[in-house]
Amino acid sequence: MSLRDVILTHTKVARARLCPEISLHLITAECPLFRGNEEDAARAGLVDPYWAFSWAGGQALARYVLDRPETVRDRRILDFGAGGGVEGLAAALAGARSVLCADIDPMAAESALANAELCGVRVAVTTDNLIGHIEPAWDVVLAGDVFYGTEMAGPTIGWLRALARSGALVLIGDPDRGFLDTTGLEELARYEAPADNDHDGSFLRPTSVYRVVP
Image (tube, rainbow, N blue to C red):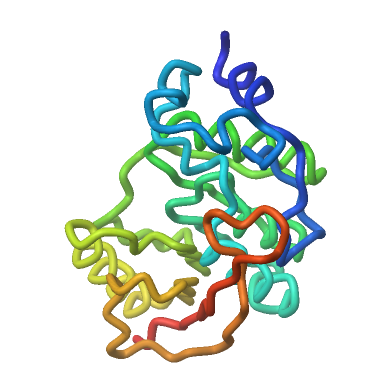
């Protein structure tokens, strides 16, 4: 099966709970893999299907963008660590000039394209590892829920700070997982966002949207 076929086989179309304007292909409670383990996912052709869940940090950042379209309107957007692309889709719906969804997982990139079709918008995708690249082509960088481990947290925040110093508006959505160094970050908003295992709105976690101060 193609990547798109695998995605369509094992997901359902659902609306992001915090931003119901956005439809996504997700592993929901109705899907057999929702209660499966890593081995079950691998047998289905899905390795680390992070893209198939709409994470709290991503939903909070998407909500922020949808409520403040002037943040992204007519601007060039990078959605870093995009997964299914909820932040990038929010930017596209809010009138961004262009959106690039970046994720090193090819399945995530394909899911972002499929989700864009659901939402009636266009995004570009890349599987390149962009950490360390300072590009003048990005006016706004969105990073939703990318701080989920110690090893990658340091290089990632260092790169995002460098992007902010280069002139980009850098926004981070983070549900206080404990890996993000918030020194020099300005908290712009705070939400009660669905937790990773939420399927009916019962499991929420406080989630902040930060601006990286140059």
